Length: 158
Image 1 (cartoon, rainbow, N blue to C red):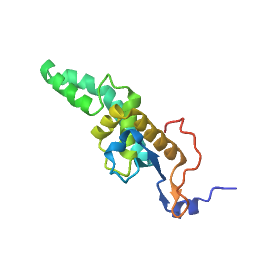
Image 2: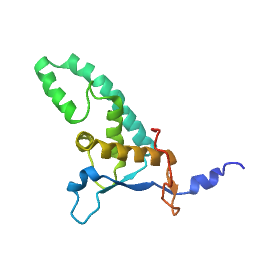
Image 3: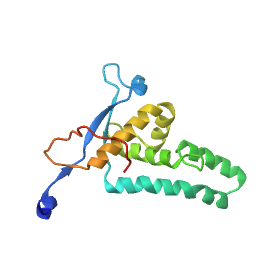
């Protein structure tokens, strides 16, 4: 059966979303609200931007050492740490921080918020990013169809 390019071109899509329990962050929800954050699949541009953060992270220390004095470098190191960047931060974590920033859609998480979540609630942080990876792997869904992800394996990363 050939691919129906015309139908593909005219179909509108929406992101997949799913609620993820975050029990380690329960004290930051209102008393009557469940400890749940909603995540969404990433689109191509967001995946590329997350990957770019990894390459920027790898190059940032070399650039800093070339441009600034020892004293200024220690201040910049502090800023890098607050943003989850630097040569001592694993590339996987840098990538996941960006993925969480782009993929958590029920709250406006910024990069530094995701860094803090990874530090204080790592199990919840990794559960969120694994679900984002799984939804991203499934892609968007045609508008009007079920948004449910069904049973998926979250073992791979996009």
